[in-house]
Image 1 (cartoon, rainbow, N blue to C red):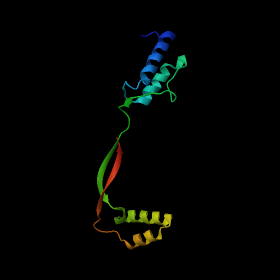
Image 2: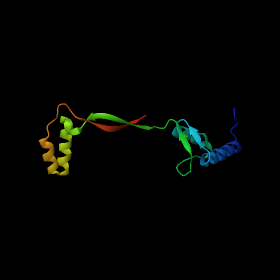
Image 3: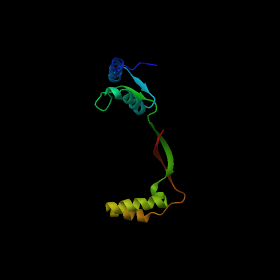
Image 4: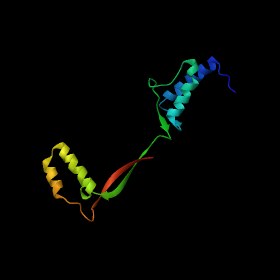
Length: 123
């Protein structure tokens, strides 16, 4: 067990503070917000914390959400009944009567034509 004397905690806080602010040192975390919360709880009794005012630099969080972009094939909106209704509603809301007339002349096509679109997944 570590004796958490005020001197020990002050030195530990100074060391962690210096370490977090160093841009030349990459800090690797597994859930940085939770780890920062735990650090603040550790130094709470001494009245010290790490927060928005601190310049914490070079942090890599391995549990951070990442986005993956995938190209998928799907029907064009104007080729499906629901997509056509949605486009008509948007054209009516914007007052674009030329687009309303163009979309009104279209009928849902069978078979539907597909287009490549991009979907973003949070991993």
